[in-house]
Each structure stands twice: as C-alpha cells, then as structure tokens.
Length: 474
Ligand SMILES: *Cc1c(COP(=O)(O)O)cnc(C)c1O
Image (cartoon, rainbow, N blue to C red; front, top):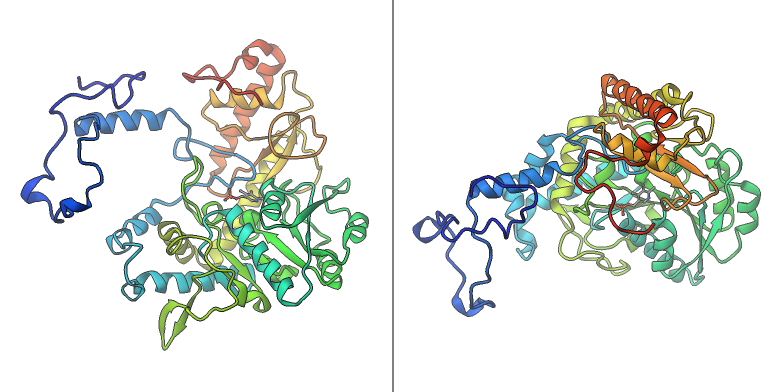
C-alpha cells in the first residue's frame, strides 16, 4: 500500500519488510552503544513503513491544520508572524544541532559566543543591563523574573508578599505571581482601557513587591500614563515588571528600561522569529536593571579575556530554571533574526506591525467597530456587537476561507477578563502584505454578509474541516 488515506494512522501503514535498513551495518557512522546499556531487550514494535509513505503520511497530517505557512494567522496576543527559513537553517548547523547537553562547557565555545552576543542584544532592545537566556517560555521568564524580585526583597531584609496585575493582563501573569509565592491583586482598568490610577495608588501598600504590566497592553493600547505609573510604583519601594510579549509593537522605538521598568521577559518565539504554537519549544529570556543582576538564574554568560563563558561565580543567583543550557536552537534563531534585521530593521518591523493593525481596524470599522475607538498598536480589539451570530461563529467561518480565527474575547471564550460580550483580538503582524490584508478585509466582509443573510451557514461553520468541533465543553 503506497497511497495513504486520511483515516489511517502510522500504525495502519505497517508493512513487514517495508522499513529501510540503509543505516544498518557498515553505513552506520556512529558505533552502537555497548549492549549493557540497552534498556529494552526485545523489539519495541514500531510500525515498518517505507520512507515515501512516512513522508506522505506526515505531510498530509501537516496539511490538516492551519499554520502561518498556509495563510493569514491574525491570532491576537500571540504574534504569529512568518519566520524566515534562513533562521531554521542556522539552528540546523551541525556544530550546534549535534552538540550534546552534557559536553564539557569548554567545548561549547560557539554556543557561549552566541549566547553572550544575544544577551547584549536583548539587553539593548529592552533597555536593561543584564540578561539570562535560559527560561523556556514567556510564562517561565515571568516566573524567573518574579523569583529574582522575591530574592531581592528578601536580601534587603524586607520581604514583600503581593504582586499587582491589571485586569487586562494575560492569564500567565497572575498564574506566575502565584507560582512564585506571591498574593496577586487585580488593578482595574479605566474607560480607555488604561490602568486606573486612583485604584493603583490605593493598592500600592508597603507589602507590594511589584506591579506587572505589559505595554502596549493585551488590548493593543499604549499605556500613556507609564511614567506616572513608574514613579508611583518606585515611590512605594516597589518594582515594575514588564511582560515583553508585546515587544513586537515597539522594538527600536521605545525601550521598557527607559519607561521605568526594572525586570523584563521577552518571548523570543513571538517577536524574534521562532515558529510557535502547538506547544513547541520557545524561550523567555529575562533581563534586569543592574541592581537585580546578581540574582539572575544560571547560566549567565560573561566575556573573560575575550572568551565567552558561563559565569560560575554567582552566589546570589536564584539557581537554574532549566536543565542544561536552555533551548539553544530557539536562541540561535533569535540571534539570526536580530543580526539580519539590525536596529533599523527592527524598528521598521514594529512600525509595519502597528500600521497593519491600524489598517485592518480602519477597514473593518463599519462591520466590526473597535472596542476602544483610538489608534491601536500591534493588535486591535474589535467588537462583534453587530453580528447576528457571534464573534465565535464568525471566527469559525473564517477557517473555511483559509484564515486562522482571531483570538476570541468575552463570555465563555478565552482568558481575557472583563464584561465584553463578544469581541476579537486581531494581530495581523508586519509580515502580511497589503494584498494579504486586503484579502482578509474582503473575507471578513463576506462572512459579515453571510452572517446577515444566512445565519445557519455561519452557525454550522467550519464546513471545510474533517473535525469541525472538538467534543469539549467551554
Ligand atoms: C504569549 C503571552 C504570554 C505567555 O507566553 P508563553 O511563551 O506562551 O508562556 C505572556 N504574556 C502575554 C501578553 C502574552 O501574549
């Protein structure tokens, strides 16, 4: 059987003798491990499948889901931009890809060299003084940053137990605060979607370690009171934490460090070009102002006598967040991205991300009015109040036209709080052309018309998928 069909699993494709043995015997470059190391002594029953069937099977599976390489992916808050393939090639360079995590640190000079340079670049883009690349994701970077803060206050002899988070925050913020052992209190937003300053001032009590903020916010709005916020937080002896997942809006334009933030994490898999989604590896470097640098997790790479190497002398470090050296391949992609973009390229990327979001907001305003009627940054929150069905159904129908659903906000949908009935957070990213944006506008209009004339059709979407709805209750 050499034609794979949609219902088959790889096990169904098993054909005795079909598997290739080209790597057996003399062709094997690496000697097999000593038999005493073998944990499994009997055959483990893997299906035997020919190479062509394996390729067809997995290519077919890959085509059953939507990725940024298939079409537009305006999933707000996630920055699903196109990632240049050149950076994947970098990550596959054999000197890096074949390095073993247990190799002597001395034999990993190339890795440390890239790490040291990348630490400097992340610090430069964020306006911080020191950086550790090890955390494995944004949420992991948050945890690292908050543990750094906790250790800092403990060292001062004035432990603080509370972290403030705005009600527009990404769900990981309160979760990380709780994981790091803090009590989390929620600061309300004002009518413009900004931090409510009166509430913030009341909530800044002597036990507050930090205020966690992202700017622009997860509503796509720039927090224009940021200087006032930083002053109020610092006057209370508290520190300001920057959730850097929205850095795509302001790279090369404004730096969190200059806005008054003390700790930052960056989602390199969002901003610095690593394919993500589906739970693949990411990285969440954490960067800090000088006073907090001694507490950073290990490894921090330093340059001694011109040679980049992990700093072994870090007695105040919070310790390791991640086994071995973090996600080398992801960090290599970030390094390649930053080198190819350069300072001017980063700024242009952010300017285009913001321009694209405002273009969509403007072109869609007559069918999906913006919830906050003002210029947005890299993403915009659009209201589904004019729909007969709902933002949820609208988004499902987009799948039939090859567009990934935007992030749904409101009753029963996602992690966003607030009393929005039905809205969509749309983030086109800078990598969509004007033609692609115009296609998206055209399809949004078409689905809006369908919603007016044929509700049942929109209700039953998506029609083009083998599985329309997973059997889960949300
Ligand atoms: C994506 C995101 C996070 C979490 O990042 P992960 O890498 O998914 O852990 C945190 N905050 C904001 C605003 C985000 O968009």
